[in-house]
Amino acid sequence: MLSALEKRSCPAESVDDIIVGVSTAVGEQGGDIARAAGLWAGWPDSVPGGVVSRLCCSGLDAVESAAGRIAAGYADIMIAGGVESMSRVPMLSDRPAIAGDNDLGERTGFVTIGVSADLTAAAHGITREELDAYAVQSHRRASVAAISDRVIPVRKGGTLLLGADEGARPDASVEGFAALPALFGEDPSWERVARRLPDAPRPVAGLHTLATAPQLADGASAVLLGNAQAARTLGRSPLAAIAGTAQTAVRSPLLTAPVTAARAALRRAGITAAGLDVVEVNESFAVTPLLLTRELNLDPAQVNPSGGALAVGHPLGASGGILIAQALDALRRCDGEYALVTIPAALGLGSAVVLRRLSENYES
Image 1 (cartoon, rainbow, N blue to C red):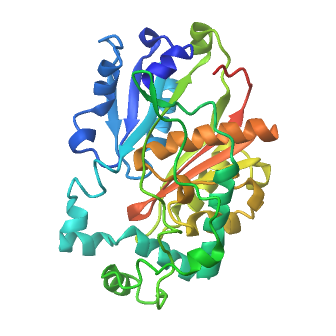
Image 2 (cartoon, rainbow, N blue to C red):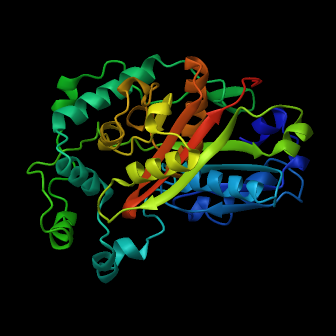
Image 3 (cartoon, one colour):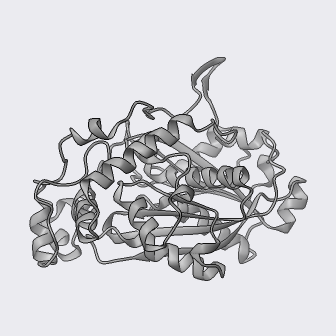
């Protein structure tokens, strides 16, 4: 990823810092993977790197942190993004106390995030049929989407190992997805929900399935950020500006923070949801885009126009940068100006970024 950025008019010696979002910063993803990546790529020893972790919001957190340092005048050029290899570092590999210590779990309201998704859908009257239909739409949109020139093929020597995202199923059908069993209906986390939110509805059979939960995936993303001096140094104009950001939280175990984060980011950007041309909301579960579309009164055609994580996966820390790239592609296709990117995370967290498109001098 870093080597590809360098080839695309970003001299490594011009970079002030690298910030990488990682949800599970342990094992192969521990030990400051940002610094390790820079050294592996052969970048100058003087380029530092660091890691931020905000669960699924880690990638957007990295981008927001880098943008804030640039805006404050502490850096000119930064790279921010994220990485997650869920095949090699599974979720909860870091054995977090919040998931394993019963007293801490009771005090914080920690539950399986799939239970949060089911609870949120039930609380807002979103049905199993709506969830399944949305998942089919995600697969179909992803299946026909053009491969972005922002996607970096994975090669080993001269051999192409992977040239595009995998997982999208053009043959996905509502009938096929409806036959899948629910995943979280009998999860023991419901006992904690009952104690914490005694009036919360509990779907009898569960709502989300393998089709309406995000696919496990490996992935990495990197976003180049800079100020006016950076544009002069690199000899190129920016594609977009960050118009507004937000990190918010709601009472766990609800999964509604993307809505609060989106509203806060839009307010800071000085626009309303009606001014958006594109929305990329992470399909952490099918309930998330459906709820955001309803709560912000969005045009469904503008939401995840190329599909999302239900079809191509959610590599946790990497998803923030991936969604930003997808949003820029979508803005270019529709000749739009504003895009919203938002992601939910466990523990009631949410993150959002509003982008304003500026130019299209992107060179592949």
